[in-house]
Structure formats: C-alpha cells, structure tokens
Length: 316
Ligand code: PMV
Image (cartoon, rainbow, N blue to C red; front, side, top):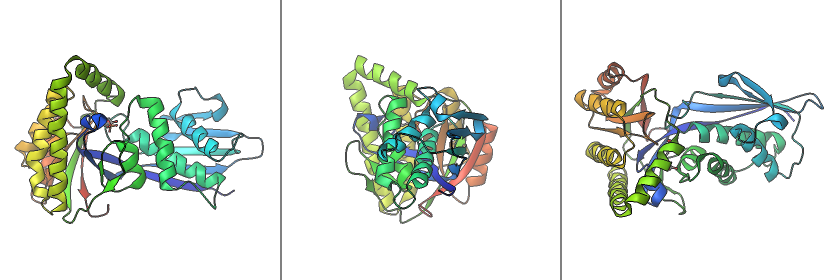
C-alpha cells in the first residue's frame, strides 16, 4: 500500500439555506480557493492507525479517539464499507484551509477528503466512487449535525453547482455566463446545528408563518436558477437581497452580517446575503470586474476578517 492524497473543496450556499431543511430548493456552488486535503501514509506493522489533525495540532490513535470525534467517525464508516474489522497501519494527516463553523462546508470537506484518501489506501483498484463517498459523508454529517439537508456533502463531493431538493435526485445545472462573488468572513464561529435547532423551535411555535417564509425563499432559489441558466447572472443581485431579508426574518442574521451586507451594497455590489447557517460565518456579494476590489476593501473595513473573490461557472 503506497501513500495517497485526496482533497475536497469548500462551498457556499447561493440561495435557500434553512428553507432547504424543510424541502424547498437551494443552490450551492463549490469554492475551490479553500480546500481540505487528506494524506494516508503506510506505517510499520503493528503501529496502528494514527490521525493527525495538522491545523489543530492534534495527533491521536483511531482506537483511542472519543466517540464523537468526527474524523474517527468518517474513517470507521469507510472501513466498515470495505468490511475491514481492523484498521490498517497508517498515518492519516488532514490539512484544511476551509474555516471551521463559518458556512463554507468545513466538516463535509474534511470528511470527503478523508473518505477518499482512506478508501484509495485500503482499496487502490476500486476506491469508493462519488456516490458512495457522498452517502458516507452524509451519514457522518447526520451524526454531528442533527438534521442536515444533505446539500453540503452533495456540492462538495461532486464539486459542481447543484440545485438541491432534499430526498430528490441531485440536479446539476448550467452556468453559461460566469459571475463573480466576494466571500467575506465575520470571524464569528457559529455552529450550524444551533442555528438550525433555533429555526426548528421557531417553526414549531408558528408553523404557518415559517412555512410562508420558506416558500418565499424557495421561490427565490427557483428564480435564481432560471436567471443563471438563461445567462443573466446580473439578475441575481435583487434576489440575494430579498433572500437576506427573509433570512433576517427567520432570525439567523446578526448585526455583523447585516453590516457586511450593507457595506458591500454601498461599495457597488448588486446584491449580498449571508451564506450558510448564519449568526456569523460568511456572507457573499455579487460583484463585477469594475467593483470587485472596492467591495473587498469595503468588506474588510466593515470588519470582515477575510474577504476574497471567487468565480462561479469558469472552473465548476
Ligand atoms: O452552515 P453551513 O454551511 O453548514 O450550511 C448549512 C445550511 C443549512 O441549510 C442551514 C442547514 C442544512 O443542513 O442544509
């Protein structure tokens, strides 16, 4: 068994977060500027399976990992798929540039990279295909996030834009005219599970109101898909602003996110919204060649700890 390396990109949700948990459509695209990379290197016989979470400066043995350790969970899930009762003697090293708990899909990206590396290591001639990796990553997402819709693992594993409706076949779609987004991080770590749980409590307290809000978000996602496929990404700006307003009403924005949305608009972005679970993490803004630099500058001045440009449609 030789050394193997595998990776997976981050992602952003363009439209439809939260409502997607309740069966409405959502659009997500991969973000290739951030990435999780896993490497499997053989170790001496009897050395056991060691996990190195390089960014967290943690090194531990698989058989001593805590029950809720997410990396151990994905390794075990892959080994079970291959009927392996004993882990191989190996060192798994994970590096990731996807910020944690920020709406860029860190958990799913790390899981996908690990699943690919471990499967290629234990079964070089027949590693797990994308469908199997997607299934195994989703199982682990469920373990850690309660009721994930499955959108994160889907966009990250297949690495292409997706129009996602829970429990339906995955739909990819065309992006004939590429467009640019600024992605900016509030620096506030906000676990998706908590925001999703709070939305559920509020939905239980006033189901008709939340169903209406989710319907509104779903309709925006459907309109956005049409605009993208018709080659009119410039129409996304107002749709993003409308989606952000609905997310505020659902209770998942926060002053820092609202400030970045306002700053992006003031600097010329045609639209902006929070992206992902909310309450912190990242926001996105629709920019063009003419205003991209100014928007990135304005986002940093308004408190973003990082801001960069990604292109949708060129390499996806
Ligand atoms: O915070 P993220 O990037 O994991 O996005 C979560 C998206 C939600 O719709 C809020 C939850 C889900 O499972 O789809």
